[in-house]
Image 1 (cartoon, rainbow, N blue to C red):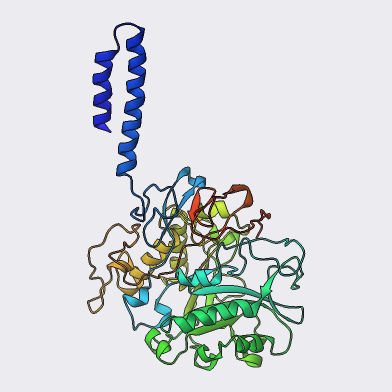
Image 2 (tube, rainbow, N blue to C red):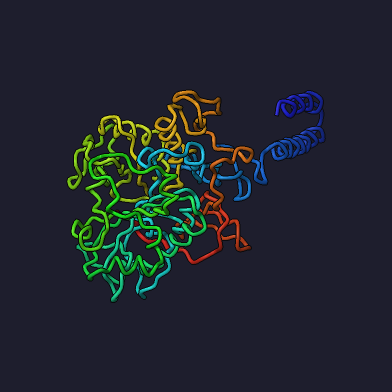
Length: 447
C-alpha cells in the first residue's frame, strides 16, 4: 500500500495543474491507481484454504483446516474472518490417564437443531440450541450429548417441551435416529468415547433400555456396576477402549439405575446451575439436584455454560473472554477441580478460538501443566512444555496430530441467509460454510 500512496502523490504533482483536460486526466489516473492498489490487496490476501485463524475471509473455501468463515457482530466484528470450528483430540497427545482427568465438549440439547426437519406436521413452536447434526458435532470433536427424551407416539422421542409432556409442535425426532448416529460414529472410530446425558421424561417400562438396544449401542455400554461411586478415579481411557466401554449414559431419573442399569447422573457427577445463573461472571454455584461442587464423593464435574434464552448471534460473545473467566470461577468453586464436561449452545460460534481454545487450555493445565494441550509432551515430567504458538492459534495443516477431520457445518436464520446460484458456498449472514441449500425457517428462539 505504501507504493500506491507514493505513486498517487507523484501523479498529483505532475497532473494537478493546467487546464480542465489535466484535471480530467488526474481523475482518470486516480481511478487507475485505485484499481491497481485493489489488485495488490487482492493478490496478497489469503484464499483457497490458506487463511489462518482471525484472517479476513470472504467464502467457505478461504479458511484452512478446522476453521470456517464467520463474524461476531455482538463484539463489533462485522467483517468475516476465520473462526475455529473443530477440537483437538487431547487423548491422542496425552493418553492412558483416568477418564475423569480430561475435559470434554458437550452440546446442550444436541438434537435441537435449527432447520431440523418437521416430522410431525405442524410448525414447530420451540427453541433451538445447535446448528448442525449430531454426526457433525461428533466429527468436530463434541464428546457429550445432552438429550431430552419423552414418551411420544408410542415411541421414545427427542423433544424440547415443558411440563414433562411432548407435543407435536415441540417434537424433533425419534430418539433412535440420533442414537444410531452415535452408534455409527463409535463403530467408525474405535478409540473414541461418548457420553450421553438424558433429561428423562420416559415412563414406559424399559423404554430407554429398548431404544438403546434397538440402536445397537449395548455393545459399547459402560456398566453402571463398574462406575466409581465414592469419588475415585475412573478407569483409564485406554482401558475403557480396550474393554469397549465407550458409551457412558446418565439419566436424571434416579429410579432408572435399579430398574434399567442406567446411571443416575448426580450420583456420579457434580453440576453447576444451568441457564442464566451459570453464565454470571465470576459465579459458579451448584445445581439443586447436585452435591456441592467441592464434594469429593463424585469424580466427574459437569459445567453448564449457556443462558436461559438461547440466541445464535449472542453465542460468539458468550464464548469469548467471559467463558474463560467462568471456567476459572468453577475451578475454584469445585476446590481446584477442572470441569470434565463443558456444555454449551451453538458450540462453533465465537470471536476466534472459542470453546475449542478454552478446552485446550483446560486439558493443558490438567494433563501436563502447560498453557494449552498442544504444548503437552508424552513421556516428560509434568510442567515440561514445548514451545507453541499463541493459545488462540488453531492447529495448521502441518500440525494435525489429534485433529478431527469432520466438516464445519452451520445453518442459520432465513432472514439472514444469502442463496448462491449453486448448492454450495451459502452465506449465513456473514457466516460462510459449505452446506447443501435447504429451506430455512426463522423461528423464535427461547430457552
